[in-house]
Length: 257
Ligand SMILES: Nc1ncnc2c1ncn2[C@@H]1O[C@H](COP(=O)(O)OP(=O)(O)OP(=O)(O)O)[C@@H](O)[C@H]1O
Image (tube, rainbow, N blue to C red; front, side):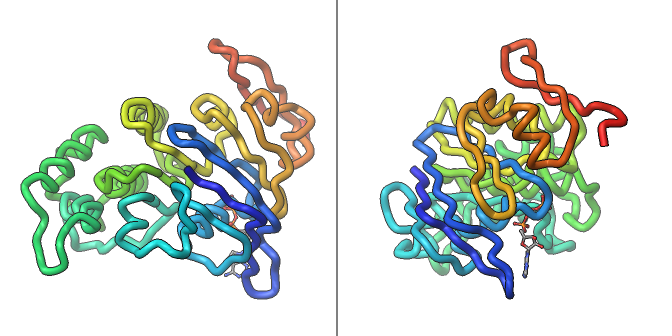
């Protein structure tokens, strides 16, 4: 569903991404992990065509560069890490923007578009916020509203840049479980960047570890989340053991630096 070949990005004087290849099949969940500045957000932006890059990006078997913006928007929904939100817009109207690719040029959103938006807000615990101005939300509420807009888009692929950083524990679980359910029910393909390594290993089928713009490891969570790889690339002292479902749980060792 998503494939990149030798994807490289230069920003200013710096090579920020170097020859990254990845492949995510329909219905799979890939989590991109790596230390600060590794190039995770840049990789997601390059897949979205938001930064100039070298190398190939293929979406659903088609070269991404050849897709018209409207077709791309029906195929891929992107939730950036911290987008600028129009402060005076209501939560409902902001989430409704996710329906833009389905509205005709001079048309208005249909009843169907509004129903879908309302149901997404409901699933994200945001119904009570629908009439609130976006500028009056907390960080975690804003993050869920950005996700609501992406989910309202009903695209086949979800690209989520750090979707849980501002969320409390319960909302992290709610958001990731919802994405997981949509993936299993509708065959959505999911790519998320995630800082929380345990969460990444818990939800994703495959992890891609980036360091200094290069893919240094990829595979099943237990293959990538090893004490050696995490210790080396995050410069951290960790203990990793299987959790209740056998997936790796990453513990920081106090005083380990
Ligand atoms: N406009 C720019 N010009 C030059 N360098 C940039 C620019 N934007 C980002 N960078 C650099 O590119 C590198 C990768 O940034 P990116 O945001 O992709 O990292 P990241 O892995 O998502 O980091 P984080 O975990 O901190 O969010 C960083 O070193 C950053 O400083």
